[in-house]
Image 1 (cartoon, rainbow over the protein chains, first blue to last red):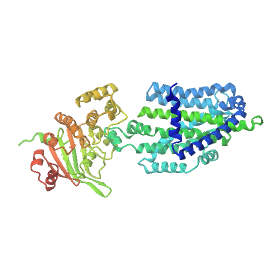
Image 2: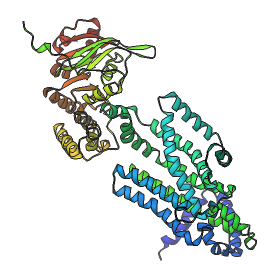
Image 3: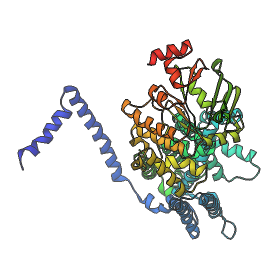
Image 4: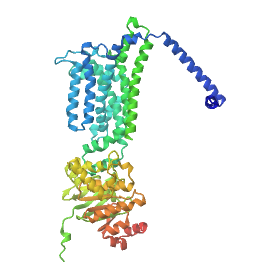
Length: 328
Length: 250
């Protein structure tokens, strides 16, 4: 052991934490706050009981989905992965039009049942699976709707521009919770067939997020110099080809971080579905906590589901970071 | 007495073209006729409408009065005519306007594949030949951002040529280049002119105009003021405004 290694930390503390009286006071204050928070946290951890998690693990993951039908969930998760990887490997346009509708149809069939499969009511759906399902479906629906609204708002046709603008400004002026209530109450009035409660909630999330996505995408469209579309048009590309090959690839790449940010907030917003008797992660947590044997275990349960939300959101933001690095 | 060369019909006819930006009139009854194989240089002070004028020839700018006919096709609001004319008219911009998300090769092959329905192999073959012609074959797989201004503009020329246009429009092709890169672009344009391409060039490059142009058009305030040979234009301009302009740039 030489003298340097022992002296260095002391020097570092002196230089960075106690270099002025003011900083010394701040350091002591911060240490005291950290100490009091962590000591109470540790004493809580000491008396916490995690059986509430381990005994209900299945409820947290899949809700009250019938055990014999769990393979359907597996299939619902696998199908999009299969489609995505096929589309990456075979970069052909024709496959898009066949695989995506077929895949979505199969998912709808597996989710709902019928045609030989037992029906599963959405009240049996729950847990992390429902959270992911609701988030994924609304994301998949909100993105194309947002794209159309963004293009509509820049359209030269006054009617389309007007409708898109009114929609976007209307939705952005309303709180999400209000839109979710409206979707529950008003959609059955305007849609001729019966919409499931879960479907109404997913549509509410979709309508809300599409408006925000539209504005994100529009900012990307607007930041492209007009020379790009002029060059494309002067080469004889028509307006759809110009959009597809020149404008959208660049505009969407520019706003990828904003779009992923919107997806992250959509993922977290699924927790509001608990207010509509849906048992996604937050809903199932609340119903577990209302059982007599788990009364008072709020800390453990909410910490656990908080960790799950965080893991997925953090994963998404890391994904977006990697996309940014790759595209620059 | 018998004038055989001049009897062919012009490939580009602009008759009394007028255009307004709001209340401001940018083109006032501008007239121009260009024959196949001619190289026409358009000069004039900034704001004279010369860029706007050539941008009307591929419908990047609409015009309100007059008539434009290109290769026998009237340029109207008919979208089919516009699409057809754009395939026959190539354009090179001051700011290059290459597509930054595509490689040099993809920049060139995109339109031949999507519009002319060439196969990828055909389009690549054409693109590589053109890149060789403009002297940057080795840059084919790079992205435009990695190229110098002069190289980018040469890619832009190759990209326009890949559609096998009958007319090439150049809108101040060297104005945003560093001085040492102007020559490499002008050299490409010079050899293009020699190959018999019909060219309309808006430029301030007097040397290029003197050496390559068949005709010089002088525009001011949205009008074509003079339409003459380069020798005449640079030595004995007729109009006072041409004289003033030349005294400023020569």
